[in-house]
Amino acid sequence: MFKILGKTGIMALALTLFIGIATSFPASAADSQNTLRQDIIKATAGHKLTTDELNRMSRVLSEIKNNKDEYDLKSKKPNSLDEMVSDLDNKPKIKSLLAENGFTTREYLIASMTLAHSAVAARVGEDKMPNTDPDNVEFVRQHQDAVDALMQTRR
Image 1 (cartoon, rainbow, N blue to C red):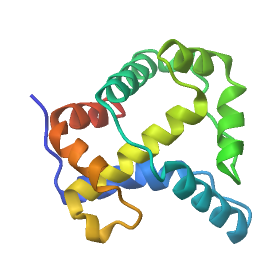
Image 2 (cartoon, rainbow, N blue to C red):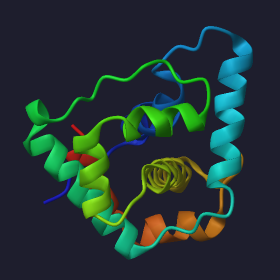
Image 3 (cartoon, helix red, strand yellow):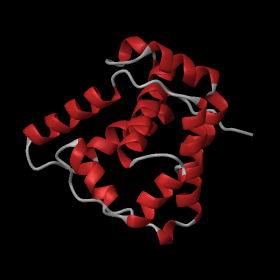
Image 4 (cartoon, one colour):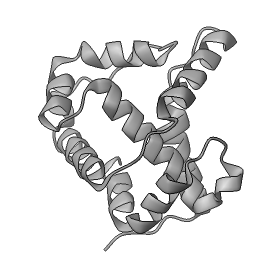
């Protein structure tokens, strides 16, 4: 069955999924980090998670996990969300996989960052996570087993 992660595991997951996406590529200056952070906050604001989206994200991550050697997962240091999108768009195999699953690169990044942020908020409390949509937190709670399975796929 699914392993339910404790608070420590969820925080580590948050760093990997949400904050990690934005900061695992150290920006050259504080301004560029702030730009990327603000881009993510703006892009995810108002995004509503759906079951269909969760299923498609699961397929993408399963494919990459099962065929790691076929995908170029190295990325340059982004200064903005646009740079993140551009970097992935320049990887035909990844771009094709996303398209096969009904995503543009931007849509996938936004959905994945929204899910990660909401999953952390569902575990630690919305009051501890700024810019959290209560509907997305409720979505995560209603689909906790599927979200946990998705998070296991990332390992």
